[in-house]
Image 1: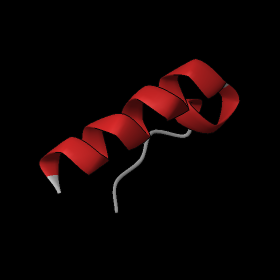
Image 2: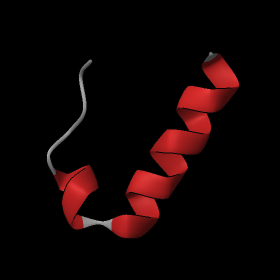
Image 3: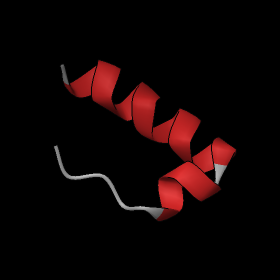
Image 4: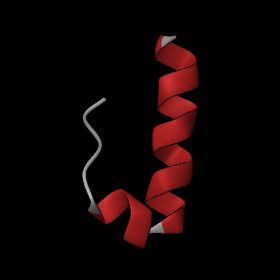
Amino acid sequence: MTVPSIAWADPARAAAFEHWLAATA
């Protein structure tokens, strides 16, 4: 899966990304 490395350094961004994944899944 393509995940920007910054997501791991930014908890808020990572949480938003997981929410987006759940929405698209």
